[in-house]
Length: 143
Image (cartoon, rainbow, N blue to C red; front, top):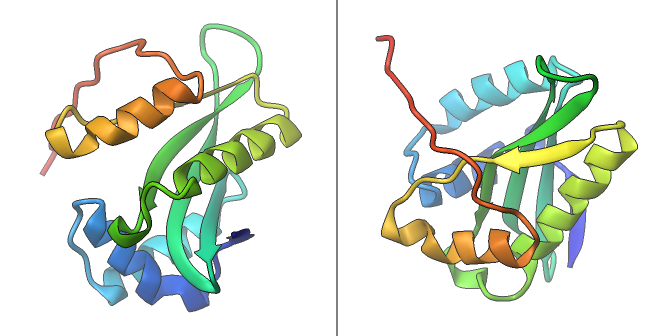
């Protein structure tokens, strides 16, 4: 298994992975999103390759605390292709995310995950990796 940074050549596989995460999109929409993401040095997108095939991704963004000094990293997207789950790919992506966070001087890392049944296995992974349930999330559409 290998981990590498995503490039513009990965748009099709990123589109497919977003759909598996439950967010239908188009290749053109994903291209626009990734172009915007790549403009900011605070974003970092990693891909997992298994036997030469891209089978997972993690999207990260650096943020700054209001309540204390320092920075943190938020995992804003994490998905492993459904045919490749249970092989340690998600765990490897999380470890790489934590390594990047440490390299850029972040003092914490976090994520939000939906309470839908299809996310429960992911929740087990997070807990096994030392992540704790800490808050309740709220969202509101502005359109």
